[in-house]
Amino acid sequence: MSDPKLSSDEIERMRTPLWEQAKEALRAGDHEAAEDLIDQAVTQWSSLQEYSINWITSLLTFIGEELDEAAVERALRKTGDEFVRPRRTSDTKWDDLPASARAKIIARAMVANFGKVEVEEDEEKIILSFQCGSGGRLIEDGRYEGDHAYLKLRSSGPQTFSRDELWVYCAHCSVNNEIQPVEWGETPTSIEFPPEQAGDPCVHHIYKNVGDIPESDFVRIGKTRP
Image (tube, rainbow, N blue to C red; front, side, top):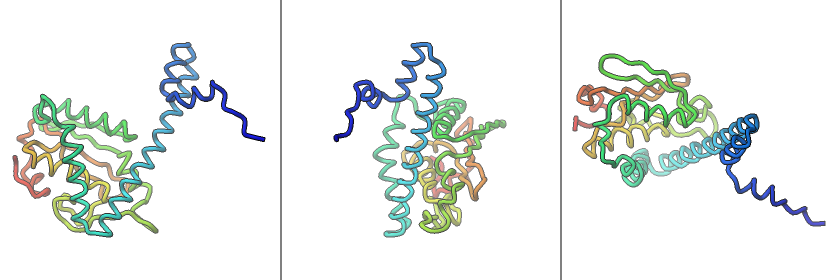
């Protein structure tokens, strides 16, 4: 006996994203069903996000172990040149945006990536402290320890923020968010301080006046102020 055929209703549900189904439920006045569908969509996205960050980190680990740590930077630079830089191209330079706008953009992206954020402000900068939903999650989950551990970069230099070691996933923060923007004649996306151990937040400094970024923050990535 052959498997039963899918009904037309089942096929339509398979073709319709959960968030669109949630909209339909809202239009029908079924708020409980809409909330349930939204929760299902978030669960699906979380599963895909976990898959993606592990895929990326596994590939970067392979590159670093099969070639060397410099090859990790070259791979990230390719991403920066071909994908990140076009995203920064607009009529308004990142440097010219108010610090409040820069902070909101960074926070929205990190929170959408399942992070949590605490916000502080002093006279010169906005401070965002994240429990990171991607790189930080890998650290919290112990993916850099034990069998099949992901790579920790140990060649102290610009790509490790001049630290003795850095989680390989977090190297995109130094290369794509700080080093390359300076090379493009711009300001870093923010000044980042990734976790040094499980439980630490990832801290971002967003300076109100980009000219107030300390010289030491450029030195640690091997650059001078643009």
